[in-house]
Length: 246
Image 1 (cartoon, rainbow, N blue to C red):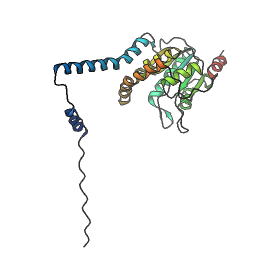
Image 2: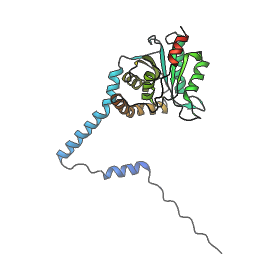
Image 3: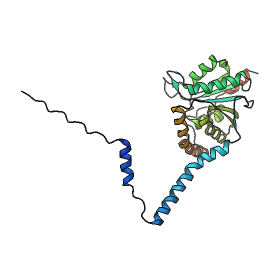
């Protein structure tokens, strides 16, 4: 009778926390007092360097944050993309668009520039944002789409250089709005920020944690001012939309 070989029992993987603990045990700390002192000093320097970008953002945007109730009257509002769910704005993005529609109905803005990702045929943030706004009372002729807003810096640079926006109210979640204001000001757009409320769920905590790391890139963008991933030719959609309402 033919006997098939018994399958080998899989070796259980070491739990991740135990693997990390094992790695930490392998780290050799300096044995001399001078070595330990230098290690502490190096750690302090790294912490300071890590916090500098966040400090820059808070100092730069300290007096530039508003609410929908006290937002200044401005011609243009810029709404940043925040993902789609089955082709529809995610809850986070819907909250941003609700704030823009509220500002329009209150007569505080005239045009909404929606900026987001349209790098794939099956993913179109700006058109989804436009459809949501028109369904909530903003006329289609008052909405302008930026299809190459691949990140915050790109959106800010394109708002200034492609769409000719010199001043705007920016709309995003609270954990992101300071970075948006700081970057748009660095790109030459006089900006005020509205940080809309959001449920403190896993996405919110992820977004807040991500901002700590994104602040470093934002500081580099503000210093070196790279061109966006896609710049293209100037567009006159904002100017036409403003002229249509006058």
